[in-house]
Length: 442
Image 1 (spheres, rainbow, N blue to C red):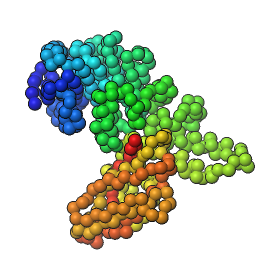
Image 2: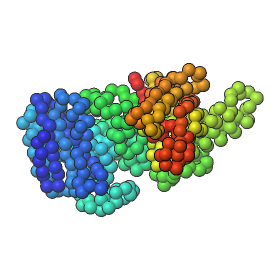
Image 3: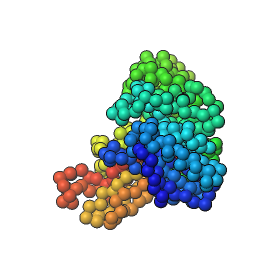
Image 4: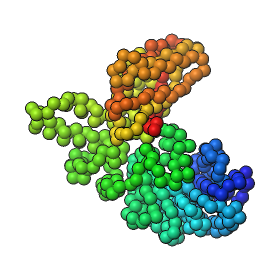
């Protein structure tokens, strides 16, 4: 790969005989390292060989606002695009890289810019966002610190945000509010690092297809267009100071009539509890005329599972019904023979879905582990796994045909570390669950 330096910026190129170019702008990277790494290289090169690729990073970590080398890099890039006779150029990045794509687009003029979790403002202008404050203080005062100053009238822009990240949604609302026709907005769920969430839930290739081949113009199950109600929710939460608990009064005042699919995870549990409280009140008032199971209704509402989202242990622990250890830093142990996972998947319709469970297997001294999965009180296992030797991690895929999940897991070969001379832990263990995800397969 060709490697170049332009002041604070570094570039590597993979050039092919093609008229299509993707320019990837790296984000902040691991702060433990002095300089950020390039991003997406392996994933993009393995995805499609019909594109040329350029990878750029900002070693100053100032959202590509450093003037040292930026003009020279942009001049080189514009000249290269002309020399290669590129007919389709796409710039994209995540977080700091997304903002960098916007800054360089203002100098180079790409055919399309795709910004994942981008800030709307940086430096002192982004005082509402307290993340990475020490780096923000390094950003010099400049018109480029407001992304709205970078929007070209003849540009073409796509912005992707997770509604579950409060800070990102504060930036999203500031961009969405101008309603400029050449700016399209899509929402998803999960964490700030949209790329990681997509990689863990359904892989990057189809995501790249949607972005780079179809220019985000086709339907995608994990990304849907912004609506005014999504932005209204984000504005209300900002006004309330982004509470991690929502009072019943605030629910009645501000959230009563919103679609549950648009509710961020940080207050989703409270929204559902308040919804149940109100439903129970109505149930008591009309109990003679309604033929529903009140307790079943309550149980399902209080065990939500957000689809298309890589759920960490802190997020899925509420769905572990019985037979599990207390939450540990990276997951939960299955303790004993029987284990339950329950939940109601929010907002899935019209597609086939699967539940993906990522776990490690406890195999001391070469002993086997046989695991059986029973779905929704069926007598025949929907999946069965047998492990021995060094096969100590796996992902099981459980087909889902309805929004309610009641999964029973049997682990008859449980054994304790203590009885295997593997420490003092006397708990009967078998598997260690690390993540859950609901994924569409259509």
